[in-house]
Amino acid sequence: MKSFRERVMAVLRRKSVDLIPFAPYDNLVPRGTVERMLRNRGMGLCHRCPLYWDERPGVRVERWSEGGVEHIVYKTPVGEVSKAVKRHLGRIADGGVVEVERLIKRETDYEPVIFMINSSVVHDNYKAFLDAVRDLGDDGVVRGEGLNPPYAASYYYFGLRNWAVEQRVHPESFRRLLEALEMYNERAWPIVLNSPAEFVSMGELSGLYGPREFRRYCLPFYERYIPKLHKRGKICAIHAHALNLSAFKEVIAETGVDVVEAFTPPPVGDLSVKEARAAWGSDVVIWINFPETVFYEGPEKTMEYTLKLLESDAGNPLVIGFTEMGLYGVKDEFTREVFVRGFNAIMDAIERFSEKEL
Image (cartoon, rainbow, N blue to C red; front, top):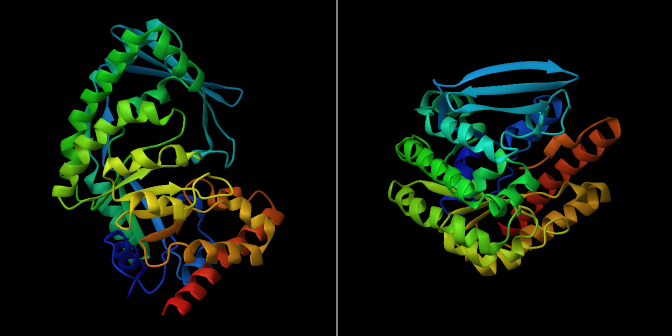
């Protein structure tokens, strides 16, 4: 293989490669000495780029900050809603922000939120996507961010507790919210389908609800959209970062996705690569979220763990990555040393495994 991009795309197309790709999310590997060293060793990057963006011409927004918290009020013709975002949190989350107050807190909040969704005007983000492809070049792969199942997307308007309660206390309002999100997807769908992205992510499996709910609310989404994307030659992924995937392994197989991404094996997740492969077959690419806790056992144990992981899936399409933390886990010189040694141990294992296989 001439480049990292060729290598990872070969895996996504279920072709054999000379080296198992190591492809963390680019935002989880801050640019600098460590990133350059790792890329010189063969690591590449996965950059995620939204395929569309939206605007809401009928909504006015007010915002102010106090005590490190930004308060945002959305004013619509049918009422107003607000949320609060805590900033300046360092590496605790993408962008260093956490929503401490969500948009829907009571039943009267549904109408303004549904208005905001229904009035959204969706635009393609193709230029930004193509710019990212050009900028990254052969050093990685750009994944287009597609649609999300309405049921999964609805969580972000509530937070976990309110989301669980509202489905049962105000089922009719919740149903109308899901309908609005479905119509939003309908508007965004042609943009995703006709996009220049070959590799597209479609939704997530968070583990916030069980396989029964996933089968009822989310599986129809995949049954509807994945075959159409396949007809366009696109490679489809699900961001399955739930830690209880053993409960979902059967229904994941029914989604028809090509890539199960953010897959976290034991000791953090509860489903091994071997068990997943038995459930999903040899055509599904397993894109691993490496469990960083292994790093604290030292580089030798990390290399041993990685080798066993690779050997358990030899001959099958596999990518090792970081999708949840990566070098965001570095807080001081001690953790920097732990993580740098861990990343290098992964590369050592990949190189050793490839030598054995060849």
